[in-house]
Length: 466
Ligand code: NAD
Image (cartoon, rainbow, N blue to C red):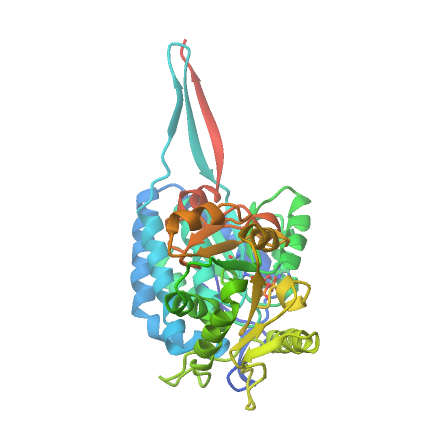
């Protein structure tokens, strides 16, 4: 069994929980169940390590670059673990170590600059950015190490120490990453703990961390916000999305579908920022439905290890059951199945790439985040109506507009109530660009300079000139 890393050392545990391989539905491994004492030890170790870690920005930058190299060296091993616990096809699993290295390199190169607010005869007033101290980082199962590093890299750069907890569905690659980090970073700078939702709740309630960075469901995010409010911990919440993609009537069908469908079904549809509701113009509706259906039918679902596989299984049993339920309910409610529509008849959590047409906005698969291989195509008559319906949701992560006229599309996309508004693309997330949700999709942002600043507390330094 892989061990947790606390204070730079392997932390042994008695209790363990099962980790299931979604490609078989069978237990693949076990992971340690963190005890309350071990969580205390992880927090205390982080607190101790942070006092030294915060003092030398250049040393932090060098250590982060060394960590990027170590992750690159271990990339295959990390991808193999990710594939085992998530069912990602080889190419998709291989993306995550690369993201980790890229985020570390990007943040290692950023400086937290001092800003002069006033410099005159009366005073020199500057704004500086201090680390919070210890950060509690809590992540979901869809991109276990990449979303972890979205938090770890900026938190470390800013001079914080981190205690990270992955999802109980996918703890393996993060445990291994924790060991790699333990070999490169000073003891305690990043501690890795594993366990269920109650461990996440205990981290948020713990007196040591001053900041909680959470990625997960809206329901989970609300609980975190409530608990963190008790002692006014700072929070960043990256939550669910139900992104609309509006296709305008001048869009080229082949190139639009060739880009939109792979985006919607990336990681078997299991990412926050993917197109999850497609709005197609009524006068070209059938043309687009046929093209989406043909593209979906051309995608190969199968063993994640096979080279021919485009789409692996859904990553968890509850998610597999939920997607099946949402699709069944939509069909029972009158939706037309243009492609797929069924669970695949084999062991594991495989679902056919599904395209649903003639579906009402009130269907649950339209109103809620499906997070799986099922895409509803909605018909609209006017662009204003499409925008209104796209915005008629509590979600506000991303949205996109597709057109042969980028200026026209920009005018439309800026009307969407979302954190990121794309034209002719979707779900492109570079490290230097802030990312966060409007409305119930989140609070605060990750990535870019604002993401770095979110791991700091601003301090005014006011020197009177006497
Ligand atoms: P989840 O909320 O069930 O769990 C996320 C993490 O929070 C897990 O580690 C879990 O153990 C922990 N947790 C659960 N309850 C908690 C509590 N009360 N206090 C503290 N921690 C708690 O989410 P999930 O099912 O693992 O992930 C899927 C969701 O994540 C989707 O809604 C998806 O859209 C969202 N997501 C958002 C982003 C983003 O950046 N906006 C990225 C990826 C996934």
